[in-house]
Image 1 (cartoon, rainbow, N blue to C red):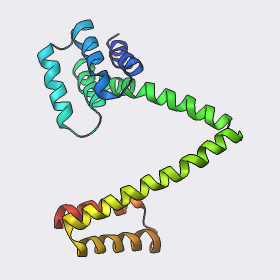
Image 2 (image 1 turned 135 degrees about the horizontal axis):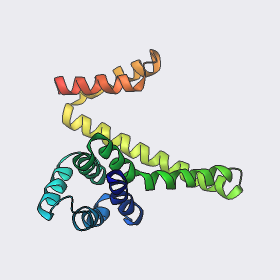
Image 3 (image 1 turned 120 degrees about the horizontal axis):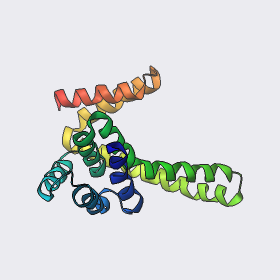
Length: 175
């Protein structure tokens, strides 16, 4: 029964908490503190502080911690799944709807309008990464990383995950 309660405690805020993690925090607090009494307000605020200090979405970190605290590893898995399930279900439904109408002229027009926007956003992000790298690491380090990444990806067909890992290790060691 505890796993069902963990699921409900994080699924319901995920469904009704429009706006992401920060918007659903009061709803999670209501479930965890008031409804089930798993944590006190002070304990909840400490879990929230730890969740804010760590990288990544707040709600999933809190769900993992509270789920683990109440139901062990399976409780953590249930809590995290319950947090991401509303978005997952909605994405599956919307992608199914989009796939069903993929030949519609309206859907084709919509995707044609979105493609240039995505390209511009990726271009701006790439420029910002290069500019930040140039300022932080210097021109020679930036040129070296660009050239090495290009050769590894395009010439030697190394998987991108390995290139990213090696680049992170290089940055950690030398930058």
